[in-house]
Image 1: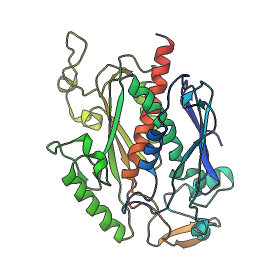
Image 2 (image 1 turned 60 degrees about the horizontal axis):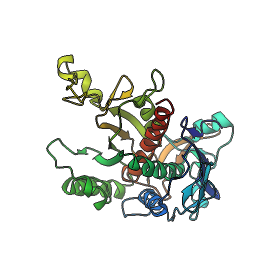
Image 3 (image 1 turned 90 degrees about the vertical axis):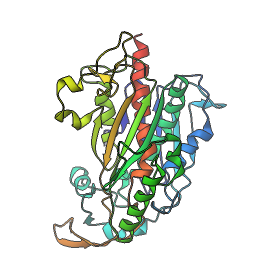
Length: 354
C-alpha cells in the first residue's frame, strides 16, 4: 500500500490500523535544536480523541503518545521523530458481523477489490483513527510555526443546515468552550440540539470547518504543481469524510464580476480586500489565509441499511457499535494539523532557497 507519506521537506509517514496494537508515525525534516512542549502535544490529541463529550463516539482511548526517537531531553535532534499511540479500547467483536459485508459509503468494497483483502475491524487502515498520527505531527509543526509568528485557528461554522451567518459574532476564544467547537455560544447550542436529535434517530449529520492562518510571510508556495492552495487542498481532502474544499472567495467567486473580485494593492503591497484568501498565483501574499472544509455525514448509522456481501448477495447491515453522529467537532484539530504540516513544509522549502 503506497500513499502513506505527506510532505516534501517536512514529511509525515503514518502506520497502523484502528484495531491493531498501535498506530504511529515517523516525522522527517524537523529542524534540530527545537524545544518541544510535550503537554501541548497531548492537549492537541485530547481535542481529537473519542469519548470527550456526550455528542461523540464513546470509544475510550487515552491517546497517549510515546516518542521513540528524534527528541532527546525535550529537544529535537534533527533525526527522524518516531512515535506511537497504543490502542487501548478495541472491541473487534463489534465488527464480526461485517466480515463479509460491505458497509454503504465506506471503503470496504474498494479496499477489498484493490487489495484482495481487508481489515473489517473498524475499517483498519481506512479508519479515521489514523488521523491521531497527523495531530501529533501537526502539534509539533504548530509549535514551530508559532515561534515564527504563524498561527492557525479552526472552528466549526456549520452543522447540517445550521450555519454561522455574517451577522453572528465570532469569538475565537470561545471555540473550545463548547463540545461543538463553534465560536458563538448561541449557534453552538443549536448545533448541539441538532446532533442530539440526529443521534437519537440513529442517523448522522455533516458540517463544515473554517480555518484561518495568520502571519504567513510572502513567498510560500511552489508553482506550478505545488501551489500553496493546491497542497492545502490535498491535505484537507486526504482527511476522512471530507467532500469539499474552498479557499478565499471559493465558489462565491463564480457569481462575481472581476471588478468586484480583484484585490486592489496598497503601496506597501497589502491588499484592500482578501478575496484571494491570502494566496495569489499559488504563492502566499502576506494576507490572512482562510479556507473552508466540508464533511459528509458519517457513513455508519445506528439503523439497518441494505447492502451486499463479498459474494454479491443482498444483505442487511445491522447498525451497531460506537460511532460519531457528527464527526465535525473532533475534526477541528485534524484540520489545524494538516494545515500546519502543509505550511511548515512550504516554509522549509521557502527557506531552502532564500
